[in-house]
Structure formats: C-alpha cells, structure tokens
Image (cartoon, rainbow, N blue to C red; front, side, top):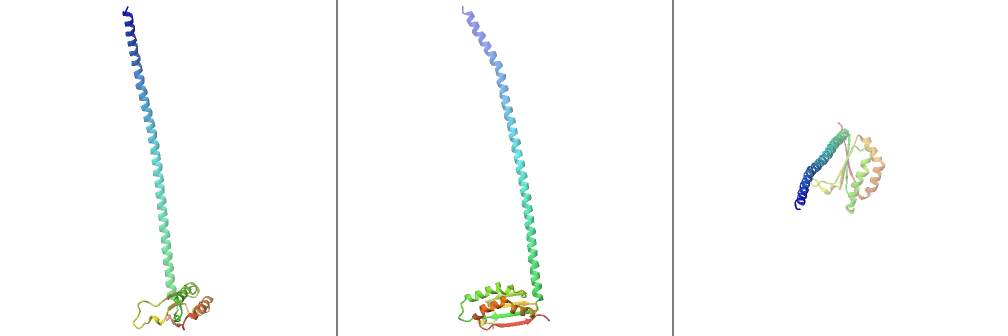
Length: 202
C-alpha cells in the first residue's frame, strides 16, 4: 500500500530536479546577454563622449586661431597708429623748422578782471586761433613757477608764441575773422599787449 505513493513522490522529486537543472543554464545565458548589452551600451556612450570631446577640442582650436588672428590684427593696428603718430610728429617738426617768423605776444589782464577771464581767453586761443590756416604752430601759457632771477611773474598774465612761414602769413593771421573776433572779445579786459616778432631765417 505505501510503496506506490512513495515511488510517486520520489519520481516527482527527480523530475523537478531535472527541470531545475535544465532551467539553470537558461538563467546564466540571460545574465550573460544582459551583461553584453550593458557593455555595448557603455561602449556606445564612451564613443559618444569621445566624439563630444573631439568636437570641443576643435572648437577650442578654432577659438585659439580666432584669438591669434585678433591679436595679430591689433598689433598691426597699433603699429599703423604708431607709424601715423610718428609721421604726424615728423611733419609738425618739419613745419616748425621751416617757419620763417616767430610772433610773441604777452597779455596782461587788468587788475579788476576776474580770474575766469584768463581761463576764458586761454580756451579761445585753442578753439579760435589754432584754426587759422597760416599758423604753423602755437603755444600758450601762464608765467612759469620757476623763472630767471630778474623775471617778475606779474609782468604778464599769459603769453602766446606763434610760428608763421613769413610776414605774409602773419598779416593773413591778423586779418583773419577768427583773430578779429578774439581781439574784439578780450581786448577790453587787457592792458596794452607787448608784441615781439623775429625772423628765424639767416
């Protein structure tokens, strides 16, 4: 009576073991497939990252080239500017050296004139007299802080030195509307000007 059920249970146990054994290799294969898939994905991600790095390196190289080009352009512009400044200075020096007549004017404000009158006059020298075509060079200034022993600062308020090619240039300067307007505006504030001209040509 008991032999048959016992045989059936034993048979079932053996069958179950066989099934488990047959399933076990399948589970290992699935695990290997999942690992292989992860590896493929990781390789794809790495390839994409390398491509991005390469693109960034190309952008950096292009930016460096652009900066180098801008630096070269800036250096050229600086050289061109320096050359222009040097050319202008040489032209001014040549023009001053070729001037034949020096016109010196010493102006003294009347004692009751405000100090603002002097600043106004100096400003007009720059904005009016320097625009007259025959003026080759012009300097304007107040008495120096240090002077020769016999010099008195109160002798004048402001001095002008102008260069002309010749006496004809000075004459055109005197008759120019800008000079006329300057004199008309400021002469009332001044004592009698002192004027000295000398010829620089031998």
